[in-house]
Amino acid sequence: MRNWLNAVLLLLSTVVLVPAANAAPDAATCLGCHGSMEGAVNVNQEKYSKSVHGSLDCSMCHVTLKGAQHQGFSGKADKATQSLAAAIGSKSKVDPVAQAACAQCHPDSYESYKASVHGQNVMVKKSSDGPVCTSCHGTPHYIQTKTNKESAVNRFNVVQACGKCHEEKHMAEKYGFSPLVMERYLESFHGRKLKVGHAGAPSCADCHGSHGIKSAKDPSSPVSGQNKIATCGKCHKGATPKFVAAITHKPLHPIAHFAELALIVLTMGTFAFICIHVLLDIFADIRDRLFRKGGKHE
Amino acid sequence: MNNAIPNEIERFDLSARIQHIVLFTSFLLLAFTGWGLKYAYQDPASAWISFWGGAKMAGLIHRIAGITMLLDFIYHQFYLVNQARKGGFRLSLVPMPKDVIDAFHNFMYFFGLRKEKPYFAKFNYMQKFDYWAVYWGMVIIGASGFFLTFPVTVSSIFPMWSVQWIWDVLFTMHSDEALLAIVFILIFHFYNEHLRPDVFPMNWMWLTGRMPIEQLKHHHPAEYDYLFGDKSKKK
Image (cartoon, rainbow over all chains, first blue to last red):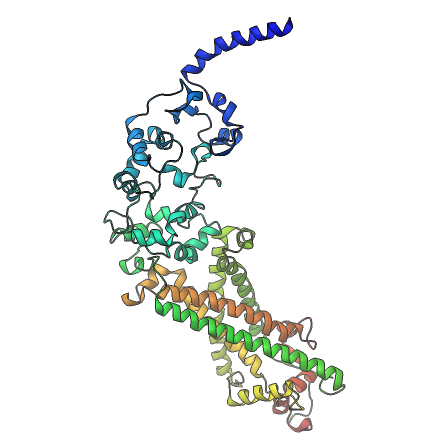
């Protein structure tokens, strides 16, 4: 008898709840399944709620959902999102509309991105490389503000984000940038200071820009031609053309290479000499103490 | 000739001792703070830099210590001129052909091919090496460090054709020769003035400035003979 009552109650509550789900399911509804699913469709509820997007409903980005299980959850994306989604459709593994949906709330970033060398490569040239929002920012579920240490585009992490493509040799060949961009930056004073946490040290974005980034060959790039003087001048007051010519990320000049080699030889040679000298001195001292008692040492 | 041989003689006057203290204090600060940047990608670097008050503070300490060291070095040149002016100044630290022979003899002694230590003068070739290493460091590390501190100003004195490599060269000079200086001090200077059984735990001369006469006779016989003539029997 009691079982029957329970069954009726369940049935009734289902009838009441289903129409509500049809409107706009909140994140909790989605996470009911996706919080415990395995693989790419899993969303970690705790990390999601702590992210900057934690208070948003899933359907704000996941505008168009496929499959019977999502029936009734589907809507229509805005124009910007649609055009970005169309451009990245071929390389977006799961849901191009959701991956492009950033454009809905971040129109300024989207506009600069669209005009940037990255955006042009993705949206106009339809290249299979070239970053979309998530390539640098990571999955939107767990995005943090850029001042947070966890953020992929935090000034101390953004170098790795750029490096994902810019330290690749085939990318350097294809797009004509120096293959040692990353290496030369990391070994520079700028890179080292950033690594040890200097608040004033420039990351890639400080000189090259971020969403609106241009090719260094583009005259509007902050690191192109005369613009470089103003860009370096942000920190180095009074920068001159001769000063700004120093940083190119190009491979080490032969003169610098051989100077380095000469200094290494000199350093190693001196090490060898002093180590041998000290060791011989010690052995001679031991010998004197053992076999020449009362000799040299009073 | 004065017959009385004192118990000890002064090797370093007060000014020289203070110069040495300033030199090694600034040297240690430079080495400690610079190390963190040279090995920025090794794990302890960031923690080490925070120990020094963060990257900005470490940089400030490094610059202040560097300028202090350069001033100390410049002061030393005036000190030398003043010593010469006062008279009685001897070029006892200038490398001489005898130093090469002494070094050769010392190695023969190490290998047991000679019975006696070389007839060392006031400063032996190792001490001269130690002394002139500072000059090398000042020229190479000091100058490059000064240039790297004021890159915008300094860039105007370098010709255009050098800008592609000069900064890399300066950086390598500063970083590699600093490593050389640190290892040199850690091995050569520390062994000779701290770990050597005769002087362990340290050669107190850096504080007292004075050397016992026995030690002088033993380690610097030529100087002993120079000062006290025929008082010691030639062996």
